[in-house]
Image (tube, rainbow, N blue to C red; front, top):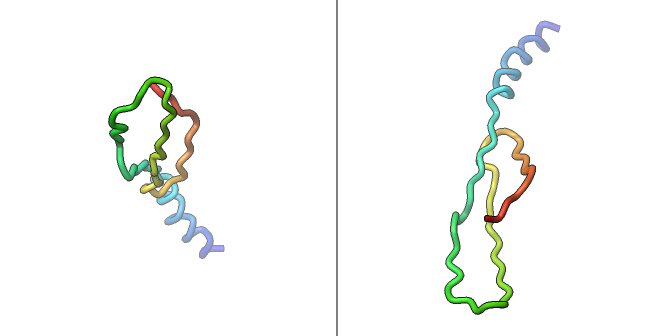
Length: 62
């Protein structure tokens, strides 16, 4: 039992400090010249560089 308490004493503070951090491969993209009506797309690659769970709740496009 003392071993479990000892492990929890060190594990819980580490979990409390776990923070997600978004890391983008590129933060912008130049589409160049596009004509009206042309369909374009680009995939922004990102990863979680933090230690906590990264939860994306919504996206907004300006």
